[in-house]
Length: 318
Image 1 (cartoon, rainbow, N blue to C red):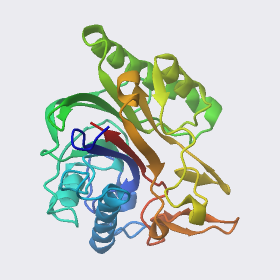
Image 2 (cartoon, rainbow, N blue to C red):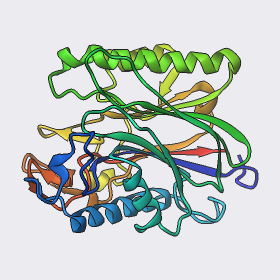
Image 3 (cartoon, rainbow, N blue to C red):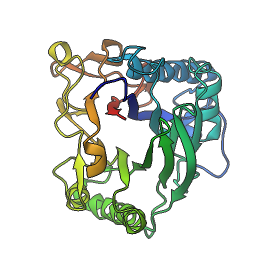
């Protein structure tokens, strides 16, 4: 397809690893990220993390894209961001950090998550015209978890996209004990997908985020049974030959992915490329061999890194 009649549209999914501000929210359990906490989360550290995340987002857009083929811009058109605390953090990221000149806008959830963790979608209003957005609250007994964020908009003035950003319940208490919780979230997600398909059978739908499951787990298999393709399955780092990165997350010396992107059939035909962004500065040497994500904290110890996850980059040709 000639790029005279098509343009690239770049979407990223990125778990930011605890992007908290330095102020206490009396309604949330966020005291571990305060200047007086054991982590000593100061404004200086917060500001450094904001600029590092802004740099990551910038580079995800320009990694494989020239200015001419992207219509004069090299920034991502949409970024789904997980583990962000509140509106304050997104305002600072888009209006004060290295991204301040990009013109980004954002929408986000206001979830009942006990720690105050939310989900956000940052978008370029020049390339994505937002039509609607809302939070979808999974009803799970005795669990305060993140809402699913739904966004509908028109990309490059042509393609209507339905995007769901997910941050599923963690595996902290073990896979077996927590899998039913993620299954409930997936069922709620599929209910919303079905409602869109009832009125628009050929809708272009994108599901992305941190699903806290691997591709072979039950909850993600259920998504594929609903007619979605995991475009991120088996992807590697953009710089794989040097880094050997083959996942967004590393646990006990092994790469794997808790972060995923699923596409409906109508979107699959527009995929140009999907990869993990693994710039060297996002990595550090792993004592068990190779590299691992350069994270912000190691337990309570400030490690000066960016995140314990790596971002996924999806390029569509519209």
